[in-house]
Amino acid sequence: MAQISLFRGKGDEGVRALRWLMVVFLVCSCGSHEIKPNVTFMVAEPGHFHAALVLKSMYPEVDSTVYVYAPEGPELNDFLQRVKDYANRADEPAVWKINPYTREDYFERLLSEKPGNVLILAGNNQRKTEYISRAVGEGIHVFSDKPMAINSEDFGLLRAAFEEAGKRGLLLYDVMTERFEITSMLQRELTQQKELFGELITGSPGNPAVIKESVHHFSKYVSGSRLVRPPWFFDVEQEGEGIVDVTTHLIDLVHWTCFPDQVIDYTKDIAINRSETWNTPIHPRQFLEVTGVPAYPDYLSKYVGSDSTLLVRCNGSIEYVVKGVTARISVTWNYQPPEGGGDTHFSQMLGSLARIEIRQGADQRYKPELYIIPSQYDPEFSGRLDSFVKGISDRYPGLAVESIQDGYHILVPDALRAGHEAHFAQVTRNFLKYLKKGNLPEWEVPNMLAKYWITTEARRLAVVR
Image (cartoon, rainbow, N blue to C red; front, top):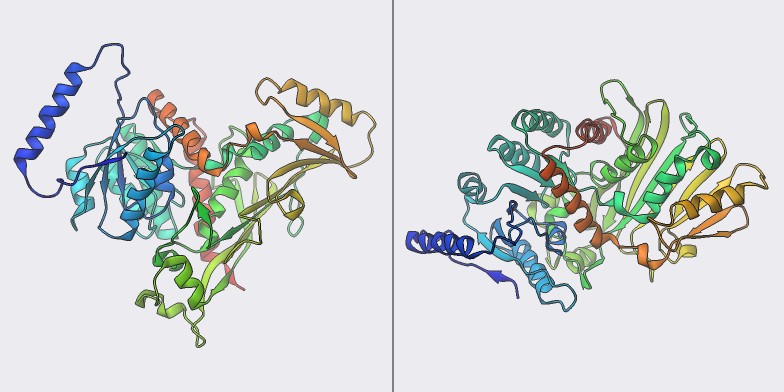
């Protein structure tokens, strides 16, 4: 069962001294053969379920005590309950000792106490960039959920935070889970196979070489239970508009797939052709169902129409050019998925010999599936594709190929489909690996800056549909 200490913030110095004596005793009593954790997590304002998903797994280099700084309320309660559920599950329980501080000065207290060396951020985005900047200024590594910036002002602050992190030898890293989705990984590998994909074409305005589309839903289930959204999730000043939120994943995949391990300089490698945003209407009944709150808070009143419908600017589209290649990304939010469905992803990359697609619609039973479609008939294409699949079978066992009407379907076994929630452990382990090395790959920081420049600049330029 998750252990939750309730004495923090009560001012009891005797209890605090006792706690330190217990820590010293435990350290001294540890056998020399045990792995001594050198990372301690702190969490601030865990208002998004992604904060809990980082703690769905344990990590040997991370201390089991997690220090949480947040105001009391339903968001903190939801976080604590999820962590408790992960501890109580029969299969690989994750038993964290949660140590919360809930007074109003919670973030100031975090910075003054600094009981850990890594700050996890996943929640309200209105002050997230500020928190990133202040944490880095206090010598704390930051592992942040997207987005790390939701407007141009935030981007300037984020850029300065990266500069400061570089000077201090700190890691500032965002949680890009989609790099660990198996069809995205295989699409990336296929685009590097010149005998199958050819060369990535450049495309043109209105006819992009790369298309990525994502459909999300306000009403959904996470870890088997219905997700409760905080009311601020519908406020674009707190959550961010759709064009700066989920788009971060799509842009990251464009650059990670098309230009693997290459530095992208936003000051010279990128140009935005056009961008637009539009609303999703949410009715009062739907708002109640997904938040549990019977009335709109005052800060949402400016988005409410005469018929009491809440208009949420959560959708966005960006067409831009990166290193000469035209890409288009779009994000759409609906209230709920179709029967048996969920969030979906579509990806298309055009090469001189073939196009590679990820489809996740009804025909795929809402599971991402990978296809490669040759540009013209080639009797030797099938043999080359089979050879490629066999060549990577040691890393991806169980892959197979089937012919379809216009090309080939890469069959991915269930054993390779980790699922979205499991990706959080994968990206966290990657972050911890970089933390142990003391640095990120040289392309990561400039590419994060490029990503957030695109989203915030596209928001500034966007036409409202």
